Image (cartoon, rainbow, N blue to C red; front, side, top):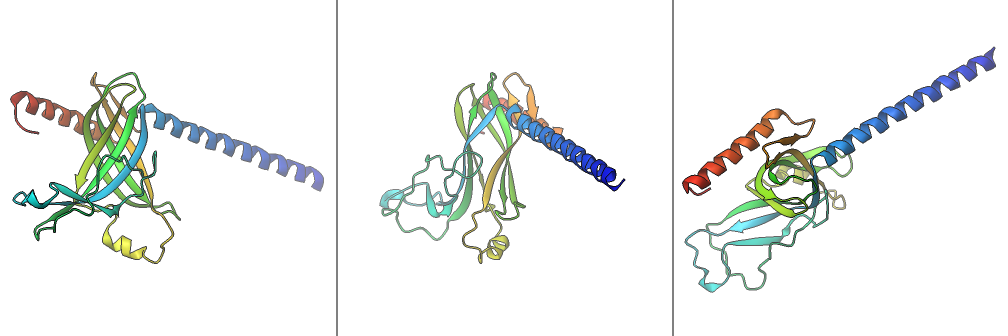
Length: 229
């Protein structure tokens, strides 16, 4: 009798494990489908800190515009994890003394490829940073990018914020862990296509796509009236 009970118990455990495996596989397939459904391939992801010079700064002594701080940037890794596009050049060696009135901005960029059949008009995306040990979310930056990307073509979305990737208090809390590298990830929330249709991530509310449509309409109106963007 005990042997029969053991056999039944083992059979029940195997059935439960099989069902759990099926559920996990189904969830994984759904996640893959959601990722590929946007028809956007993320090629590079990075951020960098830039020093903005005042408008009345005299550039006769050297460089103009902005000065990149090479020590304040992400590492330059590729798709979905930090990466560098190489589009911005640093100005080392010949940079004039910085004036007293300067401001700092953080430039977040994502290089993508349109793998679908329809031109892309705008994208809502998040730049997420996670703890490398627990994988818990540390910081999130949300952007709306308006740039047309034709099928099979690439483009780089750039957005500027005064907010650093990680708040100072969180950086100080991690100072003791010098070897851990923060994880960087881009999440596509909504895609607006040229035919006015949209793709939306299942965890994204509809109003995010509505903001893309409204922003695109405002840009079109501004261009038509000749006003600067």
